[in-house]
Amino acid sequence: MSENPYRALPSVDRLLARDDVRAAGDAAADLVRQALESAREAIAAGREAPNEDEIAEQVAGLAQVVLEPSLRRVINASGVIVHTNLGRAPLSEAAIEAMASVARGYSNLEFDLGEGERGSRYAHLEPALRQLTGAEAAIAVNNNASALLLVLSVLAEQRAEGDAPREVIISRGQAVEIGGGFRIPDVMAQSGVRLVEVGTTNRTYLRDYERAITPETAAIMRVHASNFRVVGFTEAPSLRDMGRVAHEHGLALLDDLGSGCLLETAQFGLAAEPTVAQSLAAGADVCMFSGDKLLGGPQAGIIVGKREVVERLQRHPLARALRMDKASIAGLAATLDHYLRDEALERVPVWHMISAPLDAIARRARRWRRAAGGDATVIDGRSMIGGGSLPEEGLPTKLLALPQTAGRSAQALGRRLREHDPPVVARIERDTLLLDPRTVLPGEDRIVVEALRGALGTKN
Ligand SMILES: *Cc1c(COP(=O)(O)O)cnc(C)c1O
Image (cartoon, rainbow, N blue to C red; front, side):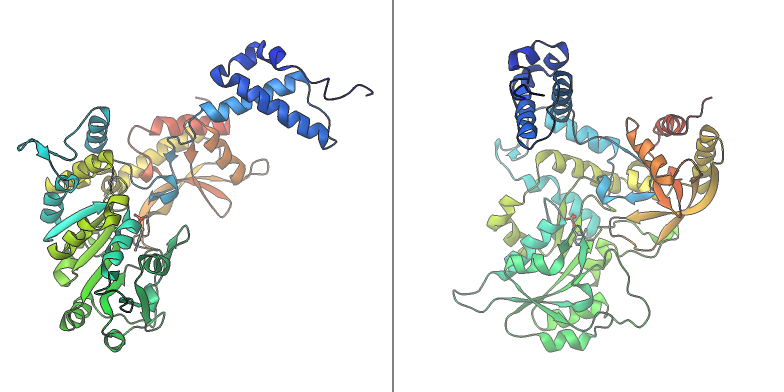
């Protein structure tokens, strides 16, 4: 081609005259310039210049990225109930209603309706949290990582300028990384406290904590070993004993519970996850836990415990930086209300899934199998709790299994289900695509059936 390739590019006006480009709306002119710019870069790099149709197509592609919401609803058929990558806990209808209601208009977020003057945003949650856990006082912040940061920052406050940093003692086996690169020791360092690790990865004795106490020690902390379990030759003192040692030395006992379980898990054949009330009763001065793990509410970090500590947390400058927004407060309050009314098993989706009877799950799996046809089978499997709760624990479930065939890999089939609108997320084990009805919400079965038929090309 002898012609100057830059001059062969279509003009902005010419592109803007096309219907397919104008469909990009107000953004069209800007996107056309971006597309032409990348065409010029391609030419400068010695590649072939795109033609007019290709540039128009690129504009449409850019428009789609800009205009289409990136964050979307998906159907969770993975069988992991509290799936961090899929947004953790789905909310109850009442929580969704409450969030929509305060989002739609104004609210008494920081307004005392009785007095007609300024109120506190924490007042909407504290009575329910106290009632449910037996704590003296409570406050909730953005998430549990924030809760940890806030509590430790308050403990890090020096008694006088120039004092040595305050110390918090933690078992080496609990200085863990929780996921997504979130490491307990890093958060502790950020707060300004000095982390003192004691014991070994598998064994820590009460005397290890006792020996590490110095005049700088502010607290002893327990961290729930969220996503792993040390088995075999292990030793960890009970929370009650840790509390006794802490209190004998005038120290606080902190418990990062992770999940925030308010109900007994043993009734569903799971290992006993410590409940918040049990932790406080055993002697913890401050407990921290997430709002969107086993509690089944919106993202939040809940702190319950001694009034004196909670008041210091409220006054700390970080409390403002880490505060919850009004919609989450409304959703959390509505979620807590289900526990107060003793209806969490029916109303809170996470607990509805945990308590779902096996025969109901099996019925749904069989319905899915009929839609899938071919070599699909229903097999026994396990649903996972997820969210760092009850690692390795699972609930018996029934899975739809779609084995890999000569012409179809499990990966390819999984991708086709994710391309459905809304996307359906399954899991793969040993070259078999598995779908678990337990984590698919009531009313979503129709979507799964539709997605299966689309992905497998089955009709009926
Ligand atoms: C999940 C978890 C956290 C972090 O909670 P977020 O709400 O995700 O910030 C902290 N500690 C433990 C033990 C956890 O399991």
